[in-house]
Length: 209
Image (cartoon, rainbow, N blue to C red; front, side, top):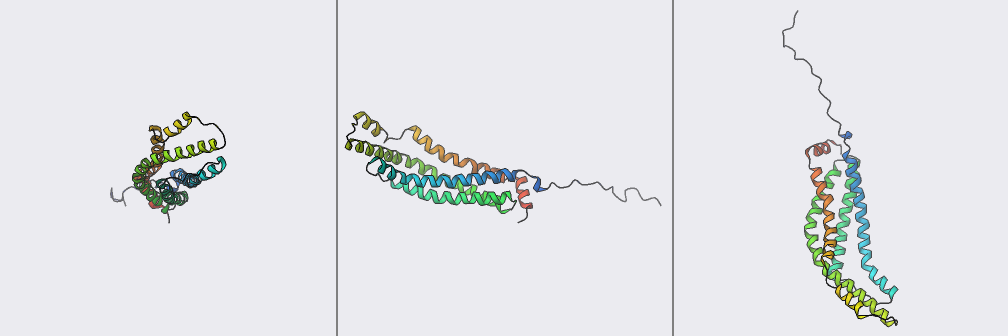
């Protein structure tokens, strides 16, 4: 018996959906996040150590210790705590992204949003701290000149004038401080834009928890 034409539509093989495990982006996103997390923790340690280095330097040179400005101390300590939290988010998010766990990209997105929001507070505070940082550096240098004079070393007025000139920050001082703060915004912005792409979000949603 002849079958009626069109009774059974032809079976057309459907292409297999791409396996999310074939994506390569989790590797470099996870690796970069882990790397920046480690660098962040290292930078925090260096910043905190820098506050105490002036006292150690004073002991070596024999000059009077000059305490750091209060704003400098508060910003370093508060920024260190927040920075440590961000670094841990990067480390955990990066590791889980490498393991293709949905919580990894989610944590990295949360980190990016928080880091961008924090930058709007941190950058103005950084600009405010530049003058106090310059005065602190000048006070340390002047204390060292005083120590040299007490030891019998001649100190010229020109040397003192040069140190006094250090009290006023110049454009390079602001550019250096704000540039470092601005560089920290680059990765959170790139991360947020990339992880919000529909294809990337679809792959993350397909991962098993």
